[in-house]
Amino acid sequence: MVARSAKRVSPFRLASLLRGEKDPSLALRLFESVDRSPDAKPFRYSLLSYDLIVTKLGAAKMFDEMEQVLVRLSRETRFSIPEPLFCRVISFYARARLFDRALSTYRSIPSFRCRGSVRSLNSVLHALLKCGEYDRMDEVLGEFRNHASPDACTCNILIKALCGSGRLDDAREVLDEMPLRGIRPDGVTFLTLINGLCSNSMLEEAFKLKDDMVRVHGIRPDARLYASLMKGSCKVGDVNMAFELKEEMLRERIELDAAIYSTLIHALFEVGRTAEVSGLLEEMRENGCKPDTVTYNVLISGSCKKKDFDEAYGLLDAMTENGCKPDVTSYNVIMGELCKEGKLEEATDLFEDMPRRGCTPDVVSYRILFSGLCEKVQLKEAAFLLDEMVFKGYTPHDASIDKLVDLLCQEGNHELLLTVLNSLRKGKAVKADYWPRMISLACKNNEFSSVELVDRLITS
Image (spheres, rainbow, N blue to C red):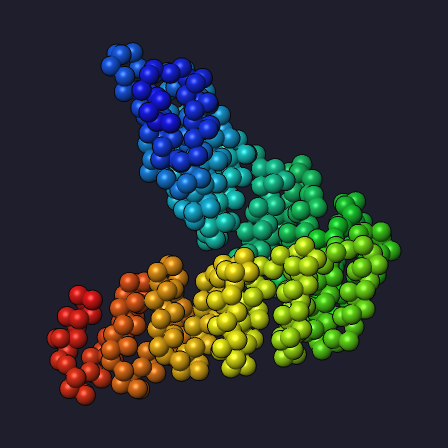
């Protein structure tokens, strides 16, 4: 497609070509090539072309290239730059956990002759939330307090960030100030704060807030809010309260979805009331609520905790038969319990069978199996799996690595230990205390000198 741009194209045609190009690198070459004509007159890019190339580069995390395009865009005087473009750039940086770049983009908006509003403020606050930069919240708010008037979305983001950082009193203060600023709290506002209260086992405050939500603000609770209260009740061991909430939902004619039933089923397994699970599943069917992946995963977890692995495998098959594809969690739950029971061969078979079943193992899958192999002292298999993990960009938990290194040192298996350390070096996971332990062991047994060992580790 790039070759087609050798002939001078119109701004409209360039936008059409950019929209159709899937490869962001080729799209960038195409974007740049139209301005390299022998014709002295510079190419007049359209705003749409800028928008398309910035979006493609940002989605591909080609941030340096995207910034170069933005520099070019900042020199354009033929049109105004719309704020939504900057909101997208901020969201790209948020997804990549690059909060400083997101903040810098927000600060640069005026240099593009664009006036930032609450929309871009909300974008940068959402980036702060996504990046977990809770400690910088006061800094950001102080800097932009006079730049834009907050709206309900701003307050909701603030409440979520404050709850995430454990500042629940401050989160409640934001809610109380909203009416004073002429901002009406919505269902998301109350759901966010109730989630925070339930996560911190502050059930009395959560239920009181639910009552205020209805009585004072006239907002009707939805299924998500009931699910949050149910999880909070189960967290403190009050399963009966969770079922009372279910009955309240039925009285209020609020539809019970799979998330509600999954929460209740999980609670029953946790407190050992497994005999009641079948009745709850029957109620689901009677209400026309189809179990989803989460529901099946809860059932699989319950079966595994009963050591009934045949039932767990049967649930995997039932998921497929009912059009509910097992996800990686479905397999990880079974593998984890198999490893705990010392059934390493079965766990390995399931791990290797996952791709055939249409599910790719993730970092959790590898960590489960690696930990299991270390526990059962299957050191060669663990070393082989470690090398595969590093190749995929994964690393085991530190405790599992320490166990493997300790076992290899105890066995005096220097060659395999050297292989393991080399794999860890590739994955940048070699801890400082591994080196003296390895050198001490090698020199103690006179296998090779410490100098030779270091040289082999560095050059391997």
